[in-house]
Image 1 (spheres, one colour):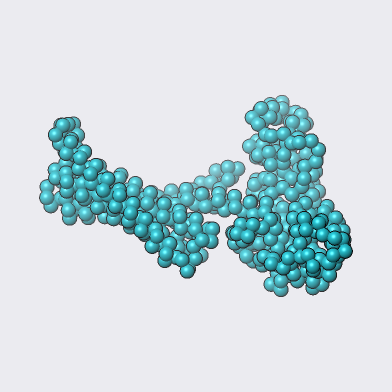
Image 2: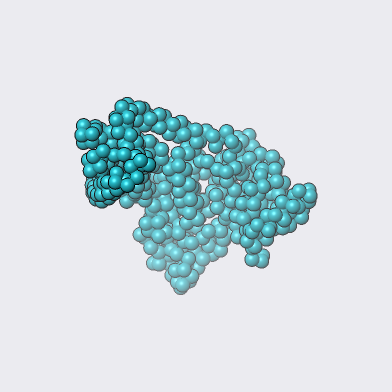
Length: 474
């Protein structure tokens, strides 16, 4: 959520450790009033960080004591679930006053996580209840779910003077005003005029003469990630949102887009780390555990399979214990190569740079890179292992692992690295694409799934090659 109100008065302080310590000291002394005074000059985003760290009880008490406008701004900056938790102990009247200070999209973010009974009570007395109720009907991860309905729209046959008056009228309702949208009498989107162009044009000029018609828009059901891609691609600070009949219903501003980018980045990073759900530091221990346990279980299951592979080739390891030294090398190379390839593909899918027309080219490029890297690393492995074990054989034989046929061993290790890197790259490239086609978040592919599967396959490749090229000759 992003704050929509402007902070009036003197320049806000920055949150530093000394302020946090002073606030904590005042709270320990049960001096809530003094604690609140310390944070009045802070930016709402910094107050939100502070009260989140203090916990629900103190957050609830301090938000109650803040001026209404500032308290509303702090709510808009809080994590949605934490915000709902705090508001659960605040009266309906106070919640309503706070939400009346927010734009519709921020009010919806807060209301969407409240208890249904409380939500209905607030909606009955909320000033913008109709707009908020309409927004609540949209999926929260669509253009309709993140848009604001406070939008400046003028008619094409108006004069600049008339349009300017409309801007002045809407200024109080809409804090984020970057462009003026142009519609016809049926509210069908026609174009837009920048605020700068409006101010520099003669007052008698018609909007139809100064407006631009090359306008970008999205319908309310477009996914929020697609909204962000369009805004980034065309450098838009405000993107019009229309219904199926092309009627203007709202707009998404760049600060909304930044929120989406941050949320999606955090979600993808968590999936990369093997965490499902929207984990947040303020979540309960049970919720955090539920988000991590499935992938930890999958990782453990994969490790068991990898151990089983080693168990199957236990006899080979007993014949040549030196093979055990290469197990971590093979597993590391498989996991790293797979993660690199999958990360590139997932990034391309997220940014819209990978689509059907260039999919084969991207796969081919990743495989070519894998072959090149595989050859280079295999050559290093062959030379390094051969020199190392030849030197060990002539020097510290009694202290180090003995390796019969060091040249064959080095060739086996090098060939294993080469094949493992290629196989891992193929898996890391294709799995995200398959998941994307199936409608599953491809970021799932860059987590423990890729690492675990490549570990197992890498070990199989290594032991099979060792059985063919090394063990028969010792």
